[in-house]
Image 1: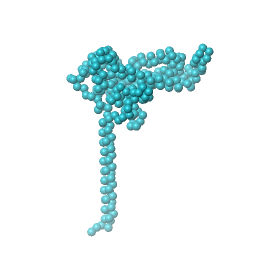
Image 2: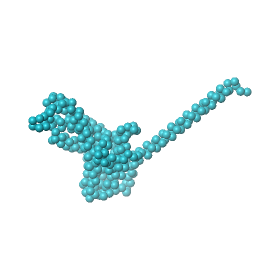
Image 3: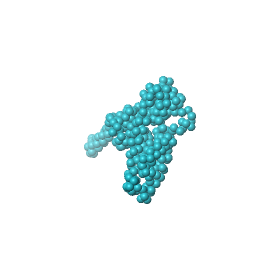
Image 4: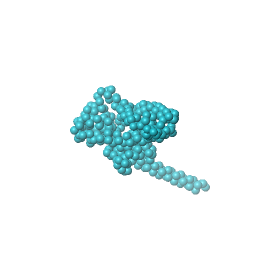
Length: 302
């Protein structure tokens, strides 16, 4: 004999079963989507693009410092250096010399940002005095107002972006002659080692000592072409641009930007440069200069 409340109880049971089945289907669908996304991320993981090193068959002996070996590779060097591996590189046998080639990322802002802040303050306060004038002819000059400092600063930053592109393309990616042992060695020390081991975190930013040569040259050239305070104002903008460049470059290798963001696009672009298009995609902080120089990486899936 059925209980008077049986229809209600049956309805409740059926409703619970429907809800459980719906929740189960939703969970399976979410897991399926998550698995697909995870699979896509795994397939696109740059680490998976790295080759393994056969210690006995590789063209160099990884048990020894590489700096003095790569020059002997000759015509095989270019293909070898563009086969990335996920392992650290030892360049020199001397511990002090080796340590001088490694730099933690935080040393870049620690060394250079105080200079940026000091010279920014110096340039602005100097221009604020109202005594700076730009002489166009011997009889005609125009005053330079303090509010022009941001414009001069941005001009320096823009100029650095061009220098960044040129150094990366024409210096770091020069193809050294196969018969020239010394140029091959220099290329490997400057940039080849970075392409051979793109995840060597100790060599993703410039050591301040080496960077000071470029920074100092940039400063002297500006002072020789512009009045002192104007040249310094442009210089400090360029120096700030360099700091941002080095920090972004480190982040593109080790950061995890949100999908769809500007940094995510830059990271994908730089990964393509390392693993698919080594002769294109020379912009780091932006792809701006790749457009006029026709070195833009095609917009394709990695």
